[in-house]
Image (cartoon, rainbow, N blue to C red):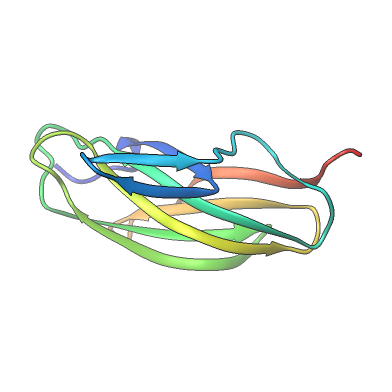
Length: 131
């Protein structure tokens, strides 16, 4: 069975992700809505934790292509490779990075599998917080 972005069920934007003992992850500073900053320019730590739930008959290598956009400008492009586990879910982690935002804007994550159709999997606004 081919891999599907429909099986990517969790995409969490946060400040940091850390691997723990016992196949556990610590996800810190989850950003569930707009990113509020006191002023511009703003430097923001971002990281991503994603879970992929393979279909029962899905196997083999998997390759995610990722692009991060600030408005329509590409700021990061990369690839995540993995192998479908025999049981359970697989995790993809984009480690913490410091990103600069000069003005209010949108921040989006675009993703495709195996070079297939690209899809937006996450979107947040970066806005100035009210005083």
